[in-house]
Length: 279
Image 1 (cartoon, rainbow, N blue to C red):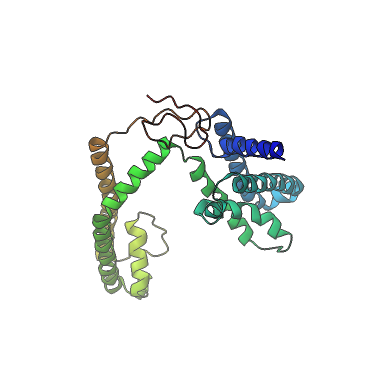
Image 2: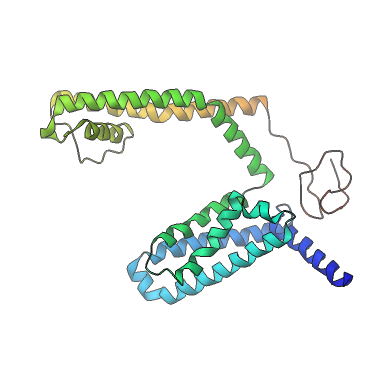
């Protein structure tokens, strides 16, 4: 009985290294396979909406989707079995995303002809963030999050200014152009202002009078500045933090399980007990 239990523990340990490890060859290979399957799954979702392609290759699309679903299902079960706190993973953000990645094909057996399952399957792209949960990418994401948080006040004030500007310009255009030019109401005029400020320019509404065209030209030029300002604010914060806090080279990963989350003076890994080779 003890021998069987030890084999099971060994299986759990090896599986944990493969699924959760980012610094081991097996872990990196698993992440690459997972990345390929996620991209393939999203590609299949898109091609199913192409009527001619789906009609010709529907059986193949269905087969590959079931294969991918089976892989995600096995992976989800193994993640629960190998982690120390399964409920924490199940109800975490990525745990719920992993669950949603496995459900659409099973639900399609009971819910036919619904497009909401296509949207759910597209959510598999969110799993890419977990694959990129490597210390190098994590440090960059933390730096970006800190820069966005530090810029929050400036960006909110700027958005408030843009909001007021669109209301004022939309009201002015409603008075200048009127219903004859398509500016049938102030909300419709505000819509035109937003479309013009963002340099989208659908063309469904356009000014006809010389004064309206002059205002439109001003709004177009203002739009380029509006796009650039938030980018400049965040970029300045990132540059400031990069200068003050240069990136620290990560320590050697544990050769037993690949973890890098251990104190610098530790001699043994707290997860697998392997001897650490600190710098």
